[in-house]
Length: 106
Image (cartoon, rainbow, N blue to C red):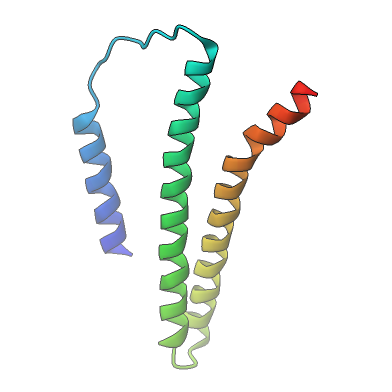
């Protein structure tokens, strides 16, 4: 877990290092803003899916190597739950804007 935390800290630092002040983008059409939001959403969903897959793999590894220890089995079940919740959130993050669009547009 410490390695993952260290990796996420490095990723956050790298992201901050790349973040610069850019002039606000000028959108000629409202669809340009929608396209930009959809591109960001795709990146976020991809990140959530990868992170969830890592949690699910870790849960499987911890379950297999638990050796019957109830504490390790419970930890693996918790990790599996978090991984599946991550997949569900990623699916909702991808589907919800489309559902709202179809409901609003009639």
